[in-house]
Image (cartoon, rainbow, N blue to C red):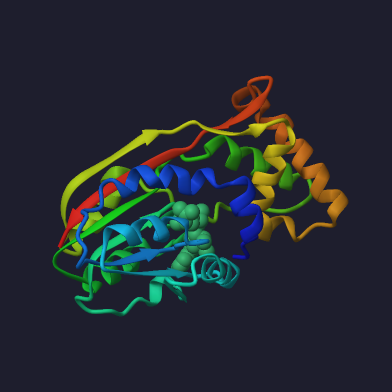
Length: 247
Ligand SMILES: C[S@@+](CC[C@H](N)C(=O)[O-])C[C@H]1O[C@@H](n2cnc3c(N)ncnc32)[C@H](O)[C@@H]1O
C-alpha cells in the first residue's frame, strides 16, 4: 500500500494525536527497549523515546520511513513488514497505534510479537475494531461498484473475542482489552472527506482516471452524508480496539 506521508502529517495527524493517549499506558523506564510497529512518520516514536532507553520504529512504507528519518534523525527507523519480525526476546515493550487492521494475518503478527518480547514484556496497541468505518466501507463499495469495480474490504477489524483468542493462543496474559466508539472529526468543510479517502483508499482510486475519481468521491459523499455529515464537518464512524497484554 502506498502512503502519502505529507498528506498524512498535514491533514491526518489526528491519528497520532489519538495515539498520545495510548502512550500513557506504556511504562516509563529508561532502560526499556521499545519496538513501534507501523511507526508512520515517527511522531509517536519521538514521544516514546523520552520514556525509554532505546526505540526502533518499523514501517512497511518507504515514504513513511523516509519522512520519519528526516524528521527525527536521532532515532532509529527501519523499512520492514511487521510479518517479517523475527526478533527473539529483544523488546520490553511492543507498541502500535492504528496499524494492525492493515494486516490480514493477525495470527502471524501476534506470534511474531510474542516471540520478540522478553519474558514479562508488554504489548500496548490500538487499532480498528469490528464495525470500524462501516458507513465509509459501505459507501465506498457502492460508489466504485457504479464504475464496475468490485471492492472487498482490505481491512481486518476483529471483535474483542476473536482478537483475545489470538492473543491467548500465543501465550499472552491480557490485562486490558476493550472496544469503543470513537467518532472522529475531520477538518471543517466537505472536501476533507475527499482527502481522507485519497489517503486511505489511494490504491483502489488509482484504478480510475482523475475525473472518475472525483465522481466516485462525490457519490460516496452523497451516500454517507446522512450518517456522517453534520452540516459543517464530517464525523467518521471510527471504532477502536485497545489492548495491554503481557508475555
Ligand atoms: C494509519 S498509519 C499509523 C502510523 C502511526 N502509528 C501513527 O499513529 O501515526 C498506519 C501505518 O501502518 C503501516 N503498516 C501497514 N501495514 C504494515 C505492515 N504489514 N508492516 C509494517 N507497517 C505496516 C503503514 O505503512 C502506515 O504507516
